[in-house]
Length: 547
Ligand code: ADP
Ligand code: MG
Ligand code: ZN
Image (cartoon, rainbow, N blue to C red; front, side):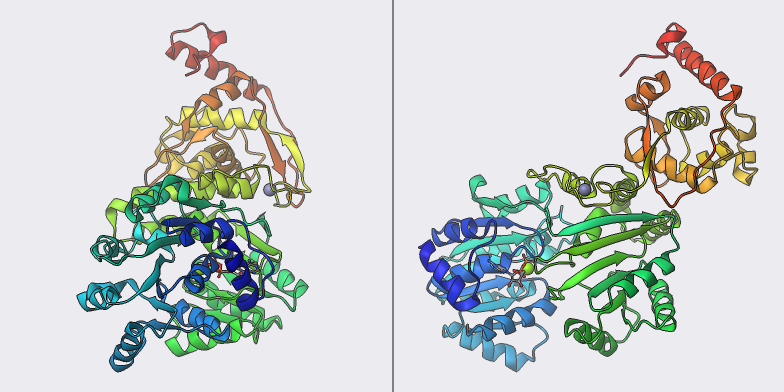
């Protein structure tokens, strides 16, 4: 059976061998086992249902929430000499009826449909009269409430399908799935636990880079200049940023495309077509761009500012290198990005989801400040069971900066957090340590704190970034509300005790700060230890118990 699959791979597609996971998924489907395939974007999920669809008798139904992708997929199949069509609302009613009629006659090996198609009982009735080879749910995370792109109409298809007597083997395919989503899909589609093919999320051809403290516009200009022939996407957080950045690049002599929801449908279509056909190489866009664009030779994706969560980031960055060739994913971070994303979450109408969104944002902020391998961070975020060694090529794995012992600074930050009652965020804490006479600092009389101005030889920006770093590394807990309220953790206690050094990477671009420690630092640390010990009812040298 699998020999036949291999033959189909070679004759129709001209590929010499299967990619990771494809063979297992195909074999299972051919053996009539419901299958869930979790593979990264560009991993080759389409072949997992297309090859069985070719090998088995009857018509394969592919349910996809991406109307814009259907036509491309169908065109690709037709170009391989395979009979395929799509049925969705982009067609006239007459055209839809005709295609359904042809479908019923068994004229197509593949039919792509949108989930809404199942809202009408008529379509289901037609399916019941046909011979079906398989039914595949592409982008299957959309059927789970836990997924980041839940579509209720997608979920409700499944119980409906189970009513039809001639139900063929079912497949679900997704790139973005946490354990919760995987289990949800598995239960819903009736997939045996050992019929889940999970190749993990790792995109080995991508390298991730985090850039901080650089002029963003300048960075982008230099970058685009250094890669003149290569296709790339630059994501901005707002339409205004997209307009401005594109104008700037044009003015500097770099012709780029632009794409956002403020443009007319025609303008957007035109941009998309030009980009896909390599008529323009660089496109500046908001997150409105990308869903459903099948362009495999994107060589880089730059995020002009931090996105709202890791899910969006990985999906957008993942549009680089879908052909398996190297892709560069750069995130340009500045602390204003955090304010912007908080603001955007605040604007969201869905009140119940906000708490979760703030928590996801916090993981994104942590990503921007962590010192661990960026690829690994993402894989751990998705609880990837295959998560392994550091990638060796992200900016944290290959940093050219140097490591600096920041233990004393960390102790001062932690003291300050304690002094401020563990009720404020990074911004205000940085102001207090800087010794700023900000209104809020005065309002809470933080000028009287012993930690006030203790780290005044750093800039407020450096301090904020350092506090984010401490949070990312688990020395501080940000809480989970709208406003982070920094709290000490068991790891902070070790630092305060002097049992754990805090080492931070200093980027080569940042200027070094002269060490300037005086007696105030030692006094503060001694007093704080004593106070914390008193609070815990312990002798001073214990500080307080680990818990
Ligand atoms: P996904 O849906 O998982 O994001 P696709 O199915 O669109 O990925 O495949 C991504 C690209 O990889 C396509 O250009 C496809 O032709 C190519 N591809 C898939 N399987 C193979 C293979 N076995 N050998 C070579 N190229 C492949
Ligand atoms: Mg796909
Ligand atoms: Zn790495």
